[in-house]
Image (cartoon, rainbow, N blue to C red; front, side):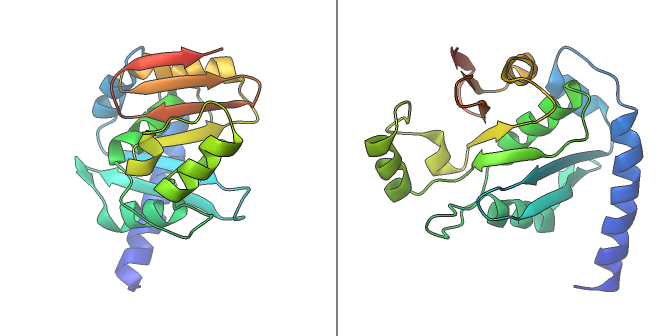
Length: 186
């Protein structure tokens, strides 16, 4: 890693901390992200691996390849270690939802990418796991926030109008994906 990358990311992190806190709420999250102008940021941690992620992944209309690579590794199938490219639109939905919720709290990521083998195992042992889950193509994430209810997270993600949103109140998480716009759950 070069000093230029460290300095650039450090500066972006400081800028992100101030601009995200001052951001207004809008009904259409993707319109809001487009209007944000210069950057998009995502914060997550994994209770499964103990890892954390806090990265600016989009600046001045362009995704940052290094940040997307970090996201890909962070959101890997923790059971198998397999890494694939996470669709950046999935991260956009999560980032937009976080902004709408006006929180700087990192998401707890319960599930990002799932290998077909992991998905099949979960289908055998759990209900509500889709046979052709978008988790297997890097287009979905199951997320939780301590400071917000499942209902609040669900409403924020639905307001994005950018993919599927599932409410899992009993398990205390929200599924967000960049597939067709649809909703489910209670």
